[in-house]
Image (cartoon, one colour):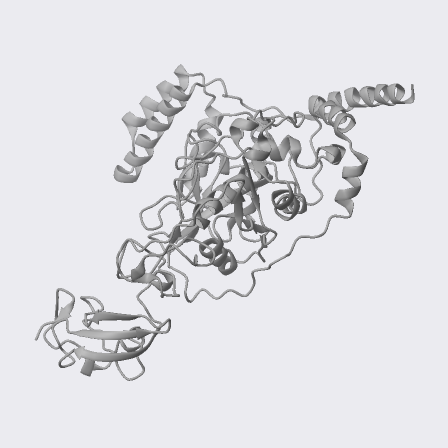
Length: 529
């Protein structure tokens, strides 16, 4: 009887709150009625206009064509003016029509599932009762008590990384010509970005750890949403209402090591806070991690190093109102209207032609948004590298996978993905080498994706004079391996040649001294005699 009275009271309060929220909601132009074909048409016409203005300074015909299409599709002038305003302020990126920009303001805010400090959840009547029912149906006192006394998993911080050995650019979508990142997903109108970013990080981590981009796995985001901690559903832990950073960390710290996640076909994504209902055989198709998850102190150098050494990194960011219109380039916000927090996965980094350093990021808004579902963002912008950064521990499946070890470029250096070198299975050519080859498609690149600098001594075998025409030198490296290296010019502008001196460090002995300069120039990588 008391339970019925309680539910009735809650129901009445919920209705009052619902009306209050609806009454205070702001209205704005909504063009979500546009089809994808119409969106693509507008985007193409607007791109033509922007390109013509950039080329000629004006675009009379292109502007007329775009205006006719806007009128045909009933797009308000305010929408086009907003895009024009953003592009007038942005230098390194382009705003345009896409599948997210055309949505209503409320739809866009629903996508932002990273709860910020002091943020109040928007009230949703359907979700409210769904959580009430979920709590009553799934509450398990013994399980809840076990959660309270759970043994903490081992915390392994990554701090104080130097970037001296890091590559200038890096992208898990192209490591040695192979793509270790799984396809971009679409979270729909649900604040479950935190779940998609977690799965993107884990899926990429699995492929990178086993050095096998062909592992067929599409992990279930719905598993995290519905089964992560259903008995705490009144706590609004995760789900479509979003999650706080410490709640996301619990997934890495507890759920992935202790329970693990199943495949998508075992618990298909619905974009709702539905009851946990995985397939009966889920325990035979589950991925887990060990307890060495990484909580990284968020700095640019730390995230770079974690990315290269541990795989894709889940991070949080602030979303400003112009971000939804992102189409290409290196994003940096042009306006200060903050819409909320978002969770994404960093898969790489680089530097554009204007010397702007950026992150390469996988989003969860489908492939029709951004650069095929990805975006580049200026390092430091939108707090993307300042809030938190998590990487899962070592992955394992219910059936074992073999970690691949390769020497595809035949340079006597192995590549085995992230983690430690396997004790068996490596080619004889690199079985004794301890230094990992970070680019197994190019025999000129080794440790740190740069020319080798780990030599400890050199033995001249066919060098001849300093200005030799690609003479050879045997180099002994600190892992005991030996390689026959050629003397060659650093580049055609400086015309210096490699020279292996007494200290045994070829890279360190590229001389600026005229005695080491090719007097007659450089040809085919060697000094002309």
